[in-house]
Length: 292
Image 1: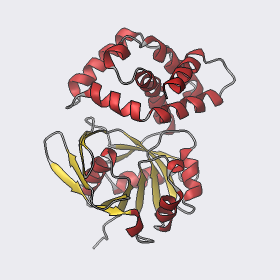
Image 2: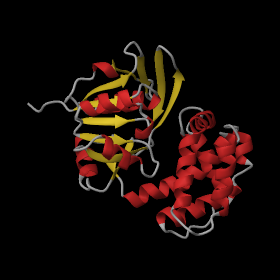
Image 3: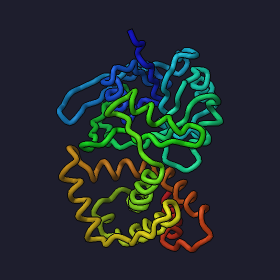
Image 4: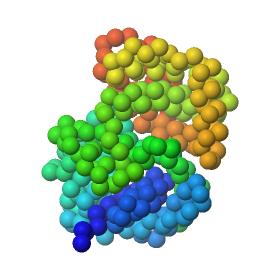
């Protein structure tokens, strides 16, 4: 009989709840790790099906007990005690959900000997309660994996293996395609964070992030993409609001304001990648830094 794969998810937030519920559905033995073990981690899918993810304290994670470790925080943001405990678990594979350029390399240094992959979240997860219970609604777009595995240098075959071990939850994605998605999304996420998540104001400010998106496409993907007209972006956003089974403007505002520092790090990385002028990215970066 095949031994169940052991998955540990760092953190006990909305992403951990959704990922835990989905990965448990593949037959894996899933736990989340937190500073507290008395947190109830609950995931609710669009059909109203409820799943609970067991939570253990970081201090109770046993050495050598993890096949897949998923980091929901940027690896460089883990404090020394948590990083040491997770490294002692000797995970065979580490999935980094942070999209910031360079974070996978940080994980390689933290977990020597482990296979490293970027796991770009494709799901939307929305915390409806926090505290002693983290309760999260989540949604995975049709025909899309919950996480897109992207290979990093040194682990080229890892996304294929992860997709086979955790079918329909983890899928393979070429690095260039993942970079294009980031270039398309992050400028708009930054603009939304600048206005504090105010959706009507954001909808009136779509011209600058569109120009910044075109610059990011050239810098990170090498594609001479035009800036999309605001009318087209508004149509896409209206369709998202109709499709996502919860309040998408509220979700997006909360999510991208909370992760504004991550957007800033991505903007900085893009700017450092090119000597060419990027006026829209520069203006976006300046206003986001001021908002923070």
